[in-house]
Every structure is written in C-alpha cells, then in structure tokens.
Length: 348
Image (cartoon, rainbow, N blue to C red; front, side):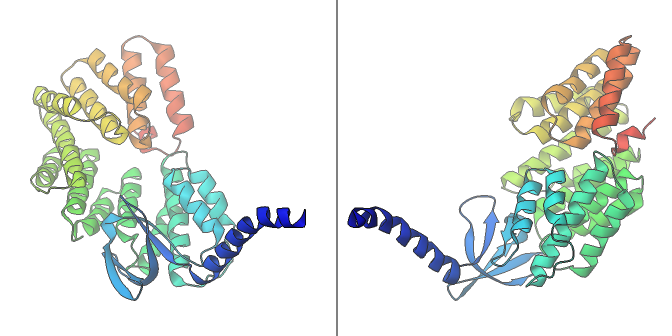
C-alpha cells in the first residue's frame, strides 16, 4: 500500500521540489513586450529610452516603447497584483494593493520606483474620472519624474502630467509635458506627442495651431502598426479642426472614411472618431446626426473615460435641444456620477 501511495505521490513531490529549486536558483526579472513570451534575465541598466537585460551572461537592450511591463524577481506580491490591476484599468483595486506597501522598504530602487509610479498613476486616473485631488496626483507624478528621470515609465508619466494639466485648464503646462514625449527617439512617440499637443490646443480653442500639430503628426511615415494608429488619430483631430474652421463637410468625409477602413474593436479609436463626427455635425447644424454620432460612443465605445464623458456632455445638451428632457437629465447624471472628476463637468 505504501509503495502504491509513494508511486502516486512521488511525481507530484518531485514537481514541487523541482519548482522549489527553480524558485531558489532560477528566478529572474521579466520584460513583457507587446508580442511574444516574456524575456527573462536580470535588469542590468535602465534609461527612459532603453532597458538592458542580462540573459545568460549576454546583455540585450530593449527599447522602452516596446515594453508593456517589467516584473522584478524580488518584488512584493502586492506590487504585482497592483500592476496587473492597472493593466486592466481597475484603478481602485490597484490602489488597494499598492496601499499595503505603505511604509515598507524595498530591496531595489527599481521596485520602489515602480510602486511610486503606479501609486501616482492611480491617483491621476481616478482624479480625472471618478474624482479626486488632481493637484495631489500631479504632485505625486511630478515627484516620480524628478526622482526617477531615467525610469522606463518616464514618457508615460509625462503624458499623464499633460492630461492632468488639460483637465485643470493649464494648457501651457500640458504643452510642456507633451513636449517631453516629442523628444523620444521613436517616430510613433513623436506622433503621439504631437497628437496630444493638438488635443490640448483643441481644448484651448486654438484650432489653427491644433491643425498644424495634427498635420505634423500625419506627415510622419513609418511602417509600424502603432504609427499607423497615431496617423489615424492625427486625421481625426485634423477633421475636427476643419469643422471648427468652417469646413465641417470636409471633416465628415475624412471621418467616414476612417470608420469604413478601421476595426471597431479598437474602442479608443472609434470613441474619438465618433465624437469628432458628432462635433462636425454640430458645426454643420445637423443636431440629429450629431446626437446619433455621440450615441455610438455612449452605447458602444465606452472604454475611454474622457471620450465617453465628452459624448455624455454633448448628449445632455442635444437631448435638451431636441425636447427630450428626461434623456438630457439621464446623460447629465451619468456624467456627474460616473465621471465626477472629468473636465467635461466644468464645460459650460
């Protein structure tokens, strides 16, 4: 009997022991990129542009624009849990996990920097959506950027600081933060920065200079999927500028072509394109068409909180104009309750 049990248990025991030996002697940092399996080794050096991973005695560089996340061999479980929640945009759960690390010391500066970045990111995202202290969020992210200017999160931190600046009407600050991204060595990041600057100028109602930024982004030709997507965002922004500058029909044509040629599975892109289409119809004095465009965002493309908040704002106005007071109240209440921290609550 004992022998039968031993035969049954031994493989599992060996697996556990083997796993234990691997955990003790084979642990490593891991770099996760957009595609493929993670690369495993030891993070040897890091800058805002590149992370060097030592793999079996060989140093391999990874450009940071291709990195989704890095996990560290000796990081606390709460950091990993919080990071995973961030990737799912579950800011509340991420905050809960990261708060467990308050007062702790960490084996490596890189781990401490990750904790500080993700804490600041959660503060910022919550402040711009459900509500919170935007000043405190900006201070936390700015502190991270100052203390860790060579961390691989640097460009993302700059973008968040720009977004926070727009949400509080500090457009000059937004341009400065987005300008930091424009200095990145990759064309798709430069396009991303120009598009962000264009959106800041749109929010400021500086339509001519916004159009210049969008056209600069669209003029960059690269063969990557990321660059192609940024080029599409540039055309969306340009179409809205055309409408604001008295050419709504030209803008509508551009946006309808984008809708026809792209996959609606990209919720962020389609929310932006339908919002821009709604704005073009508004400028063309077509309120029912505008309502229908914003409804697409409200019903189908809600993944981007800022875009959804914008759609709700316009719908609250349009339903009133179309004598649908109950629908207007519903849209306004959803905006206030779900996106209490959105800049669209402050727009007249």
